[in-house]
Amino acid sequence: MDESSIRHLRALGPPLAGYVRPGSRDNAIIARLISQGLPVGAGIVYDAANPARSVDLRSAADEAGLERVLDPKSVELSTVGGFDRSTIASLPWAGSGPHQPADLAGSNGTRFAELIAIAAVETGASALLAPTHFLDELSPWLPVDEALASILRDALDRLGAKNVAIYYPLVTTLKGARSTRFGTRIRRSLERLAKSGVIDAIWLRIHPFGTTSAGPLSLSRYLDFARSLHSVGVPLVGERTGTVGLALLGFNAVGGIESSVTFGDRYDHGGLMKVSTGSGFVPPPRVYLQEVGAIVDLSVAAALYERRGIKGRHQCANECCPRGIADTLSDPRRHFLVNRAAEISRLSAVPEVARPEHYLSTWLRPASDRMIQVVKAAPDLAGHRVRLDNWRLTLTKLLDEGAPAASAALVPTGRRLGRTA
Image (cartoon, rainbow, N blue to C red):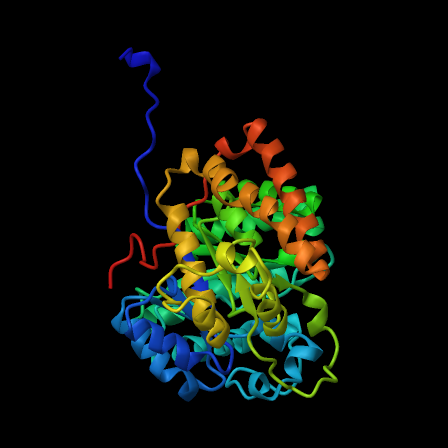
């Protein structure tokens, strides 16, 4: 064979990461899956509002070598809607009302960060989300958040927790982040934190973005913005991205994704800006249609699986559902968690250079084709078919233009690099 015709692929790097954020009723089932040796992802995200609720899950994750990421709920604590939630308002660092930048300056900011560091150590966190806040072009939070991250790193180090990683949630809009002046300020702040060893990854919490709000333009802009952050030199994780998160992984824009269990597949900051009038009722888990990437109500899934041609082609063949559709419908959370971990694992097995085409050819194109049949049986899912078609056209165009080859996001490994205990 002519040596010049040989195509050399890069060696596989660390596996792509999937983080799961349990709801109040999800801790036990995830702990059980971990104890059974079933895949649930790279780590769990928990908060300290009720640590007793997650103690078994954190213990199981620790024994299995999974990350335990503490979320201090700083974004929620700075909004009227978030602070109105009783569990969040009871956090040791909550204070008496929604936080303003002046509330977390000077000694108050130091004490705020110290209390979070103490909670991280006491609950056995292997990492924690930095206490950041929603940013727009008029927001005064950016310098405050940069200072808080540095104070938090110092506080952890003093507590002997040098191996606890800090992940920086960048909570903003695509419009604000992509604006020349504000975007430059964000990147410079992140670069300072990364260069000084304060942060170990960036978690992108973009408003509004996720499965149901990722149109062709916003998807293209998200990919472009994520690639602009690759030069910061730390891993990227896409928060609350849902099924479109697989596209972000497939096109090397991020090295990890995060989601809750059958919910939380988009981020909408607007929900935190007003006091909730809901009853607090937790809806039943939805069902993941893994062949097309849609998450639907149980009644919709049950009716679909009864349709001719759907049952045989769309039933789950993974270890979560040994009895097929009966198991899928009886335990949809187990089905979702194992399938999402498997999807990420399959992408991880493909070298970066081949991953975009692999994602398109083995998942997105077949999924958009399958939706033709699904929509005939469930017309209410026509919107999801449009989404898949739009993603397909957008990503095919980007692949043809060579955009994914520009750079690849680093993958979070959960280990502190260059820092001794």
